[in-house]
Image (tube, rainbow over all chains, first blue to last red):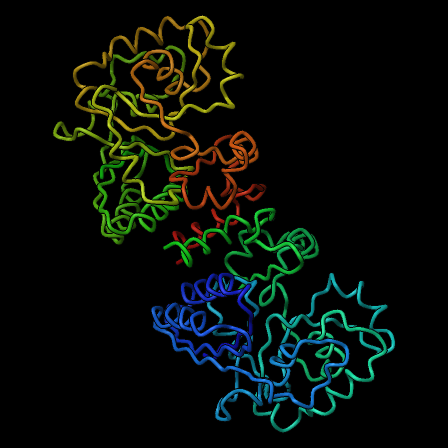
Length: 267
Length: 267
């Protein structure tokens, strides 16, 4: 399976935890991890490489220099990193047709084969929209008549179709013409420009926002209790500002996160 | 390492979870699991045996019939099972000098070699006393001038010394003469009769009561946070009436328990 990650040096430890959970819970599969970055040092890339290859997976780092996205608007001080997900098809080898982007602030707690093999022939992406976030964003997106808010932290990409349909210039134009600062640039672009070409994934299986344990449980008539989550959810996503690798974190999945962190960083 | 467990059929699933966590986190060690019981069916014992041997460990079931402890008082309706821990030295092979008793409502989350090898040459047992429980029990134990309350859920036994020093009749006499019903019979006997012959273990490492996460953290100046627990605690103990395998459970280590439960029961 092809996995895409993009990060700076602040996220190396969480990346290892995420990858460790992926490897542990998908023991029969081999992975090729594509890392798109611009600021990691050679030593940092080597460190990540050693980690991945010691788990019998492959590593393909792709360093982006300033000549890439030279035309991209920087007017609003958006970092270029925001394009790595949306325009990954330009940066990845041209013979890859499918890749799964994963944020570093997640845990993979079950096999993800069924997610990876989701039929997206007719779509650009598959992603989960986060119901709880919808209300907050309804106002923000009113001008665009968007009523869903897809989370871009777990993003299955149909790269073949990206090459045919995604228009780099359209993205740049949208950014230049956008009336206000975008809150979460790449995620906002995903929602505004591509909402209709995204296959919807059930967030409880594929992009479980750990802040909403009670919401998921109550709205499912108690089906989604802890037992069910641990057995069925493929991806736990530690969304929001509070992160489980920080000292002040507390939350339902804190002990589980620390369990994987120990195995990844202090084996 | 020799491990002792005693249980009835209600605790077979938790036992497997406990053993799975023991095996996973002590991959370099082999174990011989002694099971003392009176009520398990042959099919249940075979099921436990298959589980243990599939993990490259050994299994020695010991079935107790009515002739054992024939002299033990039953006046106060104490089940005979209460003697299995205190008089294990009578029931186990005479060539074993050391064994670690473990309750089924625990998780072993780190290697336990250092616990197992604790120097107890001068003691009958090693156990942790639960500080938080002390206050509650001060009144109850006032007649006996006992000011500690050892938890009997994790109990390292010096069987060699047991054979020399433990007096079966003394235990029976104590029970017959005890003024009130004992709340937790074997644990109470341990505290009253043997308190001075117990080596004290730090509960935070060896018998961490999961209900008191905040208490441990605050009283240690924040050293014992989740990170430290996951890295350093050897045994988490799910004390009290609320058990992590029940539907209504909630607690700091719920997700971690379910993680091990999944691996033990639904691999």
